[in-house]
Image 1: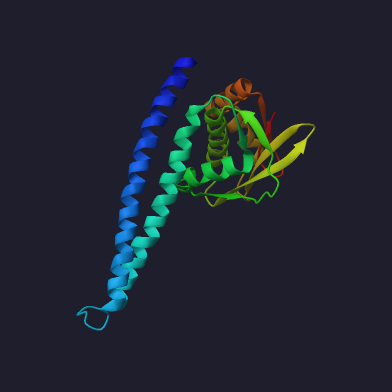
Image 2: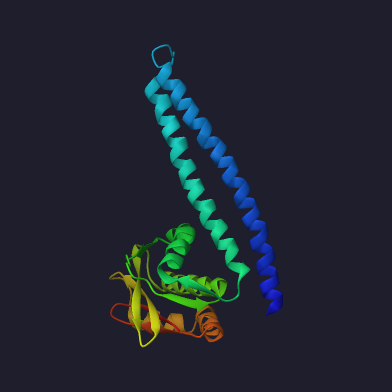
Length: 218
């Protein structure tokens, strides 16, 4: 176990360093895009090419720069989850940041992720790296057991009896819940989910109507 944490810490340290440098690169691109925009406004009439076309190019650069900053910032924060094996995390913030990072992986399966707002999200003490792996496995299980065009809705539940909860629900008409439950319960991912739950004092159960997974966090 200690060896796994050492590897995760090393990986996180290198990733955090690289994302910091990538943010510097994006900051330079963003600064130069702003400079190009200022020059365009000052010399619009004397330019031999369409000023509108240049403006669209600059706007595209700036849009992708902001997106890149968001991704590298999220990856940087994710890399630092290996710094602590036990710390307090906010459930909503943690789920939101993870969904932002894994959105492309899930979208490639034809699945959309939707996180419902939660104004008073609870916090829990846990291993942040293991916990985020648990969240990812729950989402992957449902993505594989449901068909394309499914929306997996994620909601944070207010603590009851000192336990907070996260519900993953599949909003689709194409899922046969009995078959899907059997598929998940027999999968290697569900075995891994159960294993992680035992390690961090959480529980996971497959639910029906709507089909999904309910995660209880101590």
